[in-house]
Amino acid sequence: MSTTASGKSGTWRNWAGNVIARPLREITPASVEELCDAVRRAAEDDLKVKAVGTGHSFTAAAATDGVLIRPQLLTGIRRIDREAGTVTVEAGTPLKRLNAALAREGLSLTNMGDIMEQTVSGATSTGTHGTGRDSASIAAQIRGLELVTADGSVLTCSEKENPEIFAAARIGLGALGVITAITFAVEPVFLLTAREEPMPFEKVVAEFDELWAENEHFEFYWFPHTGNTNTKRNNRSAGPERPVGRLSGWFEDEFLSNGVFRAANWVGRAAPGTIPAIARISSRALSARTYTDIPYKVFTSPRRVRFVEMEYAVPRAALVETLRELKALVDRSNLRISFPVEVRTAPADDIALSTASGRDSAYIAVHMFRGTPYQAYFTAAERIFTAHEGRPHWGKVHTRDAEYFAGVYPRFGEFTAVRDRLDPDRRFGNDYLRRVLGS
Image 1: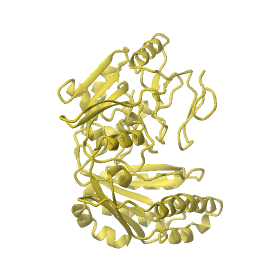
Image 2: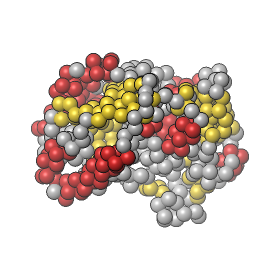
Image 3: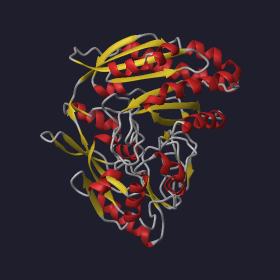
């Protein structure tokens, strides 16, 4: 049995440490053919199969006691089609390597999330997204997919080829097969100017509609126990390039946002009563700054402080009310929250299980420092989110089930029908998928 990234033979843990799996065997295929063979052998042995990326999901979406597929040898760019504006990339490629490789080719994704540790298949399969007025999740930028299905055969799909599978598989939760390659839409690399500045909570929520309408990418972080937020506006720029200085970048992104923030969380975990005071200091620590750089250097930032996260998408029109309810909950409770609440948006898309499927959406993400009890906070927050027909991020903590999803996803039945066709024996099933998709 191979040794996993956690260093323990036969035991797999996710990034946050809240999910543990003990697969019977692990496979690291060096080719699509080897992967097909592994799936066929699993079927002969009547074992479940799950592919795992970097473990950045907080749910057990990739956990299995059967065959664990590690795709780290299935990496790199297969081809670039400049005329079509696409790039085809192997499924195990980390987003950070894809972003750097595209930049060297003078290309970029249109939008992306704020971390880039995940593999392209893991990020898209769980619906990873950034923030955007007009541009949507990473999965919405997919133009084609290749996946190994339950019988070990390779299936390709796009808007023209197997379109009903394509509509489901772009965010497939690993339930339809093992993705081996993804074709993304890309464009010539461009510059973004980022404007980051503190803003009072009341001002942000009062002016949210204008801030959203006036900026291509708007997001903000609210610091619980305070009336303070930090806002970020990203807009395309003609230049010139003015990146964050090396020293100031290290000071703000590493020393303050990771080093000091980690120390503050350690103090807060040991003495929860200090958290409101720490929050007031933290929320004022970052000063306003403006810089211009290529997309991935603006959209993404390092996240070295480990946490557990819940995120829900609510209808964009319901954001302000939902956020006010969350703030009232924190203000009147004994909860002590050391992590800021992240707020982003996405336009409606046409992917069956996308959190933005068929509706303009706003995302509210709540976090807790790893090792601190999060259940009371997340349970109370989830009650607020679900009252607004919220849809949880597939890779983040939630308690919803298939019955709930059938009510908030208009195309839920379409997805489960594709699953029944492609994987009737649930070769790619596990306990998490049984809960969220039904048996």
